[in-house]
Image (cartoon, rainbow, N blue to C red; front, top):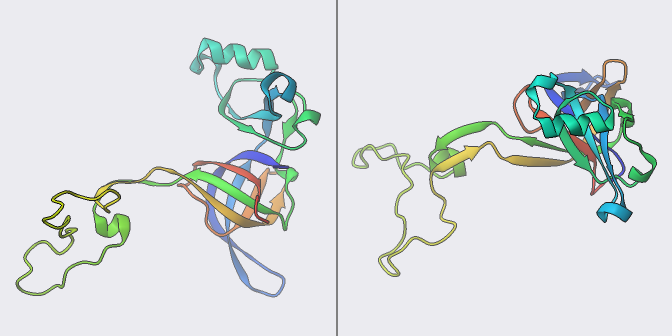
Amino acid sequence: MKKGIIGRKLGMTQIFADNGAAIPVTVIEAGPCFVVQKKTAEVDGYDAVQLGFEDIREKLVTKPSAGHFKKAGVSAKRHLKEFRLDDAANMNVGDVVAADTFAAGDKVDITGITKGRGYTGTVKRWGNHILRMTHGTGPIHRQPGSMGVIDPARIFKNKKMPGQYGNEQVTVLNLEVIKIDAEKGLIAVKGAVPGAKGGIVFIRDSVKA
């Protein structure tokens, strides 16, 4: 991994290309992030940096966390994320990582927490078919149906059942950076990004590009 940053999803819009084509983009407020901790291969067994994003009042952090930020010499941050960057050895505690770390045309992977949809049935959760909307089926059109056969008289593992849907970590690969606004700290990425408006996302250069 060469580049990484923490950001906040602001929403979707569209950008018009030079040929007039409308490109759907997700706008992300990326950084500025501060290096709160540096890990080295000699001490920790690997090279990485811990980035902090978004200031928070000191009274809202625990004493151990306050000491962690004080040691780094940076203000308390609401969100922390560790990135194993190739050039982590060249970075120092207190350095700033901004949106201009990326450039238009870059391919990135974005990780976020999807919208939570609560307890849902199999039709919404797994895309199961509903029963025919006709006489004789009764009020069971959206029920999952048979759970299994008489023998072995049990439900097999991985049976698609109702349950919690959403609110899980998802990574979308190979999204293209369309535009960078370094002054405002904004990154416009082609396509959709996991999570609701205002959700925290982690951006890194693509592993498959």
